[in-house]
Length: 387
Ligand code: SF4
Ligand code: SF4
View (tube, rainbow, N blue to C red):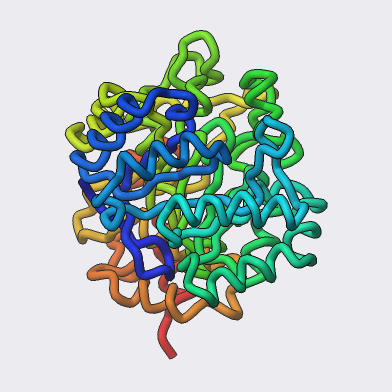
């Protein structure tokens, strides 16, 4: 297993994590063998958004003494007051369900996630109300270590991050979501089905969100990595052919600030399939062939010019890490007058910088997305030039 820093939390997550929703309603024995398989493969981060007492207890019992080896994302505001799962902002219900989860988890949860911040109303009801104060108090008491949130909407997520309360974000990321217009709500798209007609290039708000996370050192964990299975299905994939699970995982893991791609598994076989990713070579995980041929509604190639940080352009004769230079440049462009010190220092600590480019053009001929790499190397050197 490979582990990555989760932003500023000081914790490290396995790059493949377990979304536990498919363990809901399953017998304890099945929960136990799935959790054991996950931990045996080095998975150390679990998302438990389900409010049901039985599934929470089954997961906790299955973890047993290995609880200390995992990081749990528990969700504040996930309830089942009316015997069905609900997103609640009612503080009595919110407290009842989260405190029950805390009790089941021996009084401690690593990440207290503000649940489902998708609309302006969600934002207002959570961040401008006693809801956020409640989370802050949980953190103060040590019941949770870090405050995070979950969202499917880049515009609202950007607002949530700018409150400076949160340190980790659970966000829906996959190639189809990333190239639809912002006014298409990701979950509606899942219901309606993906269609190439809605493709309109890399969605700028999403790109901005990922860069903001990197800039503010917010760790991202990914949900809907496989687009609820639609991206790996020949019937539902919008790309003319299905992606593989490994290509979807690789896509999620190559977005800036992403620590872990969570995969929903309900048995050890599915865990095995998810961690298979770790054994594959670069060619087997490569998603660029499919994405670079994507055409939008007007028939034009949709994804030209923006860097996908895929490293398809390597090797560079002077060993510039082109994807990283492009990534830091993209962040710097957000606000050139106020480039964060952390991003400056990341750039300065690269072994080979943009200024070393000898303009051989090898990278540009290899890049599936037509990125003007030579120009970008010059720009990066200009933006990050030390005084
Ligand atoms: S320049 Fe092109 S090939 Fe290189 S990382 Fe960016 S998108 Fe990938
Ligand atoms: S053009 Fe510059 S960045 Fe690209 S491969 Fe050549 S030296 Fe490396």
